[in-house]
Amino acid sequence: MLSEILEKATVPFSQAHTSAGLTGCAQMVNTMRGKFRITSTPGIGTLVSILLPISANRAKPS
Image 1 (cartoon, one colour):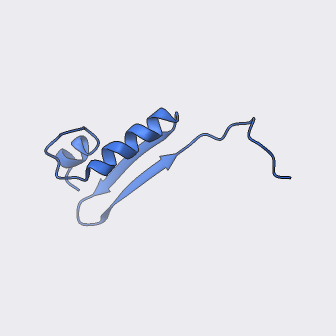
Image 2 (cartoon, one colour):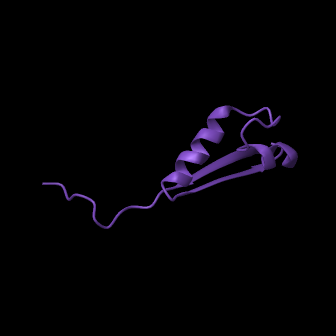
């Protein structure tokens, strides 16, 4: 993915030619206080990373 496209990949209504799904995913991850990152090397590939926090108060399995 070219750097010009990568910069706009999660901007709503941009001309980045990326799926609107990336914008929705980034917004959901941000709402959940997570981290959403896209890295890309042209000719090699693109990596989308999503990190979500785990609550210390989560229910324990019975």
